[in-house]
Image (cartoon, rainbow, N blue to C red):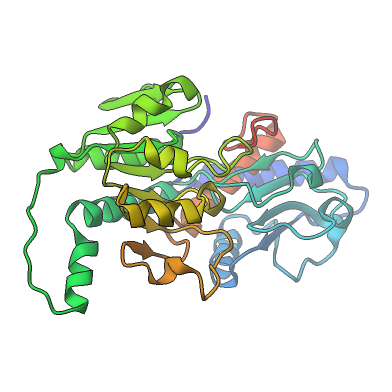
Length: 344
């Protein structure tokens, strides 16, 4: 059975003893040289130092390296990163596993990673929890008219707007993967009726689920707040466009925490200016950051944050990574393996 989202709060000492034993055997049989296997981390250096401390505690047999200090490239078996280096396959000829430090993998050119090397996206509790927090914040801000009050404060206007119960605000979630399901759980707990849409049929308790292109219009027609949590694929690029906005209820609002290329920015601006959409909370952009003269920066109906909706937590991430290394060495199923045909 594939590990659940909550399976990695902290790996046990038994698991790490397994890892040490497995790797010792692995290198006894597979390496003519007594070359210590290395793990390279290529992302935010501050969090990387936390990873390094955790690896020293839990997997001291692995030579942990912080990019750009890669040591002997032939010793690199495991690589964790946000953006891949050039010539990955040529630079690391003995690579066995590649880890994305985030839930998304659209920053990778899948053709640049050898077909025999699994790519694993991050599945650790911190990503889901922080996404739940951010989306709850965004939906509540929209539902309780925070953008209106920010505007009023700027011009010293005191005007109380009507408060409506959460039960009267239907939230639609585009994408019902792990993050979408986690967000739906949090929002239903706050009293918002939720509906969700995905390419393939999902069944979530307390969520009205829709699937496929044939049910997209019905899903959108009642979504007063639309949340985008789709993976970025050729099919979803530009999905948040004028055609989609026109199928939402008049005055609906948008939360984009998927990827910047999901959104056609000019169509959003037009929908806001016409009143078809009332507001938007945006955490992702294309490019990032937007140019200084981009109209989104100063639009009165837009709240922007710098791609911080969810963030991998080192404790859970290291536990998941080391558990997957053990599973890989034992030939067992790993968590988060990317289906290259589907692109996620």
